[in-house]
Structures are given as C-alpha cells and as structure tokens.
Length: 457
Image 1 (cartoon, rainbow, N blue to C red):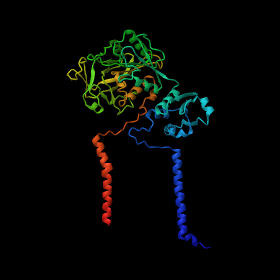
Image 2 (image 1 turned 60 degrees about the horizontal axis):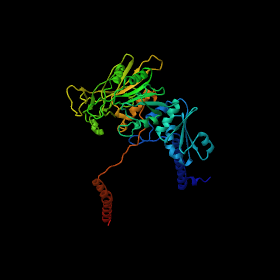
Image 3 (image 1 turned 135 degrees about the vertical axis):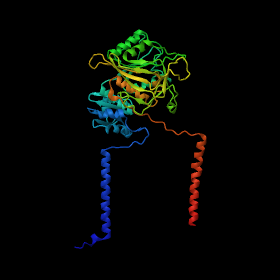
C-alpha cells in the first residue's frame, strides 16, 4: 500500500488545520454553553449601579416559595428588560422570569389585566402584585408586598407645626412620602388635636418635629398607642428661642419619653471636627459615622449620616422598657445649652461628645408578640427634602420604619441612585483642552511623521 501521501507536507498541514479548527470549535462551544448556563457579569461602576442591592439579595436568598416575575410587552422590547430581570433570576432558583408578548397573547393579556405595555406582575402563590415601573425599587417592593400579604400604613401627626407630607419645599416631607410608598407603605395624616386617637390601621406612627406643645390628650394617645403594642418614630428638635418660629419645650411629650428611658436634653449639638465641611455642612449639622450593634444600624457601617439642628439624648432602661443607643456623634462635638443666641461659642459648662442622637426601645406589654416599639431621634430635619438624600440618611430612615413594623428581614442598604459624574470646567480649562486636542496633538503627529520621512530620506 502506498502511504507516501500520509507523509506529505500538504497532508500534515491539512490534518493540523482540522485539529486546530476542532479544538477552537470545542473551546468556543464550551465557553458559550457555560456563559448561557452561568450568567455572570462584573460591575465596574463606582457605586455598583448595575448590581442588585443588599436588600434585594437578602430577600431572594431567603425565599422559601417560588416567585414568578411576569413581564408583558412587545417581543422587540424584551431585551431592554432582560438586563434587570435576569439579575433577579440569577439570585435564586425560586425566582422565575416570564416574558409574555402582549400582541401574540392578546386574550391572556386581557385576562391578566394588562393595560399598558411594560406591565410587570410579581406572583407568589395566589397573590399577585403589580410593579409600577421597571426599576429595582419597584420590583423588589412588589415582591415584598406579595410575600408579606399587604401594605403597611405610616401615620404622620399634624396640627402642631410638624413637617408636612404634601410640602415639596426644603423642609417638607414629600420625599419621605415618595420613598415610603415605593417601599409599600401607605401614608396618612393624623390630627390628634381634633381627635386624640390613633387609627387602628396605623402600622407606624411618625411624630415629625412638632413646633408647638402637645396638649395632654394628644400625648396620652401616643403613650397608650405604644404601651398597647403600637410602633412609633418620634423626632423632637431642640427648643431654640432665637428664631422667628420658636420651638416649644413640649414637656408633656418629653416626659413620656423620659418615662420610657429616653431623656431629650434641652441643648443644641455642634460638631467642631471640621469633617462636616467635606460635605458642605457647618457645625450645626453633626456628622455620625459610629453605630451600635442594633438591627436598625447593623448594616450602616462606614456610611455617614447627618443631623442638622439636633439635640442630645440620654438613654437608660425603664421599668417596662429596654432601650438601646443607635448612633452618636464624634468626640469633637459638644452640646450647648445656650438656646437663645445663634452665636456658636463653646464654654466650660457644655457637654462634650460623643453624644447620643438616636435610640430605639421596646415596651413590654405582657402580651405574646405584642410588645410596643419606639425610636427617638433628637432631630426632625434630617429626613426633610433638603437633607433626605445625604449619604445614608434615607437608608437609616427606612431601616427604622422596617424595624418598627417588624420587617427586620428588609433592613439593608437600598437600591442606589445614579451618581451624577459630570465634568465641570471653567473657560480657561476648556480653552486649554481645545488647543491641546485640536492643535497640539495633531501637530506632534505631523512633526513625528516628517521626522521619520527625513531620516529615511
């Protein structure tokens, strides 16, 4: 048999080529198979904009029943939704994502109640909740509502100069209202001055910095609500006497807090460390970076919060209460008791930091799973519109609300907002960039080319 063709150079080259092609084909096929089965990505943005938040991950990892996310839209728009929805699917085997074409499944879309393109339903068993938009906050919020089986209600007290939910100005709470509703809370207002009674559907009662004294029936309503198993977030400002809108001492309310183990001192906390200047804040807005090991603040490590115009608190356990510190100021802070002058001046009698600004407590009612809970903060403007988005303030507030409503599993850092990373330049800098990019760099290339030509010549 003539086998010389097998030893020919052309035959060997052909065999090598076939082997190389097969190897490359096998490698590419394996990589594609693994990429399709294990969808992994790396988020290189500074604030991990394209990574699901700790809260969403925590909820997904703790799922004990199947959850289906159904996305209804035209098939041409499915790709735009996959980037977010597939991240949910990759978190847990209990999460299933369905992409349904509203045109091809018209009758099914009508039966499901689909009214607009891009409708998203989260289904848990027989429960179904619609997400308002294709965002992590809305989808995770709908998932929480479906899992918990209903909305919670936050009732804000009005009538004595508190911050208003409908006020969109700097000192208003319209931002708080928006964030609570995104996190599946209904918001209502309660005027205890007209009717000193807390509605039964209130999950959490919020007292947002009253300017005027509460009368005794109002205070009794708040006291009875907590001591019968209710939940309350109470924010009391320092009683400043130098402003046009002076803040009353509100002794009836502070006496109730004192009976629970939280004493709101009549002082103004100031921070002289200079750290606040990095965040464009003055000494009247003390910065907090140290937190205790309470469920509310456990995930706030290395996240700064600020509290403009605040008073210090003293904390101890009461007869029926267990009270814990949440956070305190730096050692470079102090509390002045001179509340009749806007001048910042430290004296020897001032209380030195660190100073407690927030506390959380539990009131023992004697009922099984019926203990009251309360959180006290010596400042109310820290969640006003002008300050709510400062660093970790929004997360801290929602953590407080979740703890008060016994949703500890939801306490975490929430979805991140997009960072504004625009480049701002003055006229001189823009002129320099113009000459460097339009004139200098092309000129250098031309000179280098001429130099190479001249050497070869």
